[in-house]
Length: 152
View 1 (cartoon, rainbow, N blue to C red):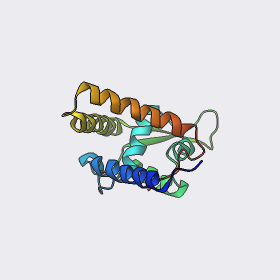
View 2 (cartoon, helix red, strand yellow):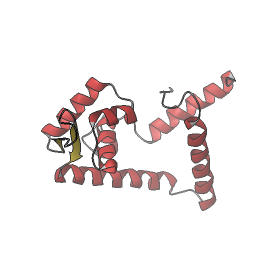
View 3 (cartoon, rainbow, N blue to C red):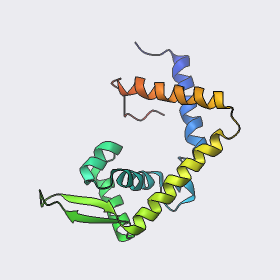
View 4 (cartoon, rainbow, N blue to C red):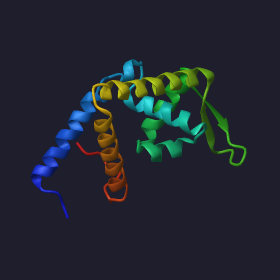
């Protein structure tokens, strides 16, 4: 079953609204010097502790060459280190340096603060309803064939 045109229009309107209030189209996200994609890479490496580029490509659904450029940039800035895997010398393990951990911590904190600001004038009931709705949306879309595809 496909949604009707008015439903599609409402979903796209919500996507534009949410993208706008989170500032995802800003050149630099969360008042940092990093693009949205660069910040996501830093956050994912920080959450995982250690990763390989292919895992990041799959998790974030980013073009491999674009990921390579991001990794090179973050490495040049001293935010990440690459080490050969002990189990497979062809594989580089990527982790955050101390400087990278500081940036990760700042981005993570600013992201939390952004959500707090977004919800600050809402009642506890409203927050719980929005949270439940977001969890439901995620659960439903994770099981659909369209999960992970960009929708504008």
